[in-house]
Picture: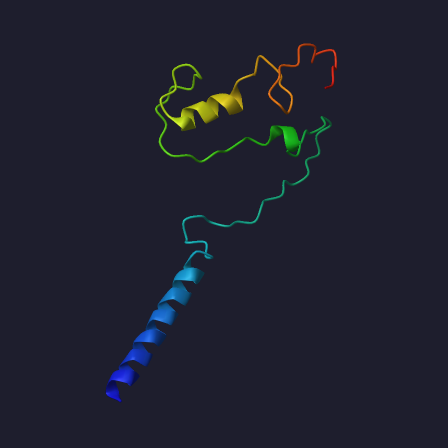
Length: 113
């Protein structure tokens, strides 16, 4: 009887610990401070003031998380597959291919296959 009660108590403790660990990822963690944005007070100067333009789709930076790089971002000298991925994402391809992998010779003129 005591053994069953001990197992139930241990089970409940483990369930609570797992539940709290799931909720721990939802918090701010205190490392970042959340402050309200300050608004600039209007001035009485005659010169127009400029405001920062909102970010559009083209100005948002690409952030990619990978394992360690060997820092050779060339398709010819890359040591790891991660370096080859960076080269593929950042360098211009010289040839255009279709779905089957065949080269499209007049792609700049709009040739469709």
